[in-house]
Length: 152
Figure 1 (tube, rainbow, N blue to C red):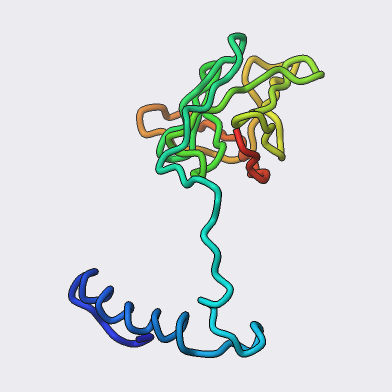
Figure 2 (cartoon, one colour; figure 1 turned 60 degrees about the vertical axis):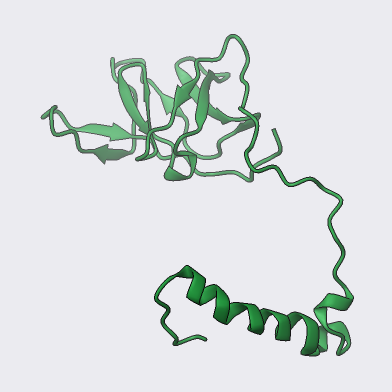
């Protein structure tokens, strides 16, 4: 199947179904003591949700939607939080330092650089340039890394 090409998904599925049956029901696996995987399968007791519940933030949080490009607008600037957060909402919260903000997703702070405004400037410090066709002034974005996600 590795080098086969299919006209559509249903043709691919028709070819895949017999292989899956062979792999899971007939072919012995050394890691399973030469049993077939079906001998070890158990139905999960956990419920699978088709969609996650809306993430709620506190009443004092300033919640921002992450755009398709992974950008958030905050205090007149653009900051990059990452494309993994597209369509989700994040909440910048003040940190222990003055004029420094930490971005939260759900209940978890994002690891990485914080959003910071230097005391001697009126702009927020940033690390990566962003292009903005309508604004000739180069803007910068702060890239925040993604921490492991905890259940909300």
